[in-house]
Amino acid sequence: MQTEIEKIQRIINIFKTSKATIRPHFIVVGASGAGKSYTVQQLTAQANLNYLEVNAAQLTKEGTSGNSLSKALTPLLTCGNKMTVCFVDEFDKLFISGNSNSQLAHETTNGVQNEFLKVLESNIASVYGDYGKYVNASVDNVLFVFAGAFNGEQSISLDLLRDFGVKTEFLGPGRVSL
Figure 1 (tube, one colour):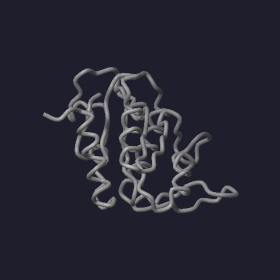
Figure 2 (cartoon, helix red, strand yellow):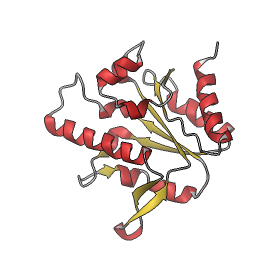
Figure 3 (cartoon, helix red, strand yellow):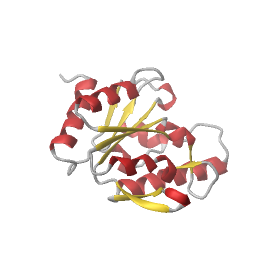
Figure 4 (spheres, rainbow, N blue to C red):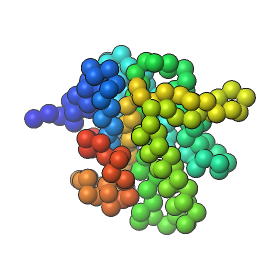
């Protein structure tokens, strides 16, 4: 039986061996401090791929003051055509189900989710370039790994992720628990 780390390694290897023609985006679930980012970063380094980390808790909807997805993904411009693993930490903060956030917070986090979906379904992302102008960055060579604690749930299923509000497109080949 494969360990959770071997599952992550296998997915990264599929991405690498396919030369990014297969991009099995997935979710890593685990308690804060469980080593989600460290594990993915180490496995990415072993595979000799670029690594980019984005903190989803800091993202704001495009057009709202703050750190938009287009700004967070700007480092992709320096990756060129090299295959990259983009680790999206605190992804669970985009899902407010069961929290006491306001309707405005829901609208904002839902907007960020939709912006991510556009990126996943495309081969380019509009990112913040020089002099405040938006430019296109390639994402057809990027594997997105979404991670979060999801309220500390110990045994989280795909159905529970959907109950949290995770859209099906984010689930990819599933989830890995650390």
